Image: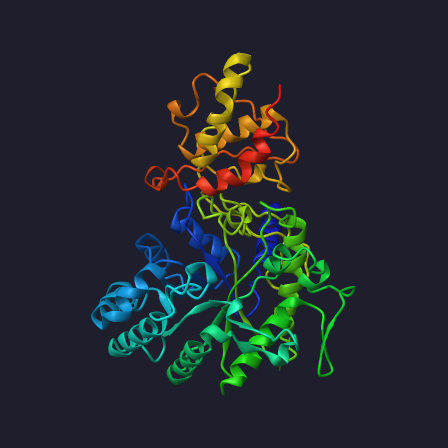
Length: 487
């Protein structure tokens, strides 16, 4: 057998196909997003047959056309008010974003996500009165367009829309949150009427992140040492299944315990927090994918396959980090389509890696680093402010406490910040100066633990660079950086 034939067999084995019902979230909040055609090929090479979008981007839809990949479109929260009060706006949205791509050889559209987690506490109830009317108008518009029998509207909701009472904290006692129980009941009834699924985002990582006393093993699927939650003879050993079955109980309490459920987002970040690391992510996905492949379901819904969308596909360096610095590091791939860790999407437990993105073009192998000839006086007067500026306009989250680049000395911190800004600005000459504190270099300043990136070359890069988006990130990381500015 030739060497080429062996290589081809290995490639085919690597992309043997994802487990049934598995999809992935494709987010694009990046300064240098991967070209859509590269992303679609990445999905196909890895056997991923379902994708969930957060906006209906023309380039993404054009790349998906003819791919056969089942697609969930999305309506952002900022459009809900207009669509709720104007059925004409809903019809126009469907015409422009659904009908336009719904043809033989077009995009296989399966769902429309109306909003994204609109009942989060952070929104202060802004969308409580408009989510259901928007959902109704979109589904009615789909029906009027003649596609409502095969394209369904739903609302991806955070898992905090339901809970169990403190006096009986078990899954079977699950109910919708008291402050939104009325609207949630109405949403469930409408979904049942239109034969649409309930979509929920479940994040075991956040259970761990938000509660220092949360047992680590209970966040994973191999948590044999985790103290189980006992519920009417059932022992729950992981939070994912306990959370899912709490939703099943909440649906049953309003008369729809058999409603189909889609897990719209589930995943584990790899940086930006001491618990966000590749080893934990690999452990989590190994357990999740094995569970999905076995079709064992959950205790409340045994022997059923679950429809699950992993979150997310690639890292996004312009996501808001208000929830935490980890928000920019959810991808199973790096920003450039490189796999982060071994992962078998078939759920068979093979020691294999994902197929990397093909045809990715990079900027030149040039970094920006602290000028070794900068005077102590300039460093003392200017460096803090310049790091502040760089990290306000680029992603410095890996410098934060517990992150991959935390622990470098002051020179390393400054070089990382300057390079992050330089790459975000597509290596423009003026982006590596900082009043003489920085210089371009062809010597890679990366360390064993900390990668100094070279950004990808993309025609969208210039348009995607948006100054000021990282102000919260800067606040999160600058303290740890500036504390080490001693020379």
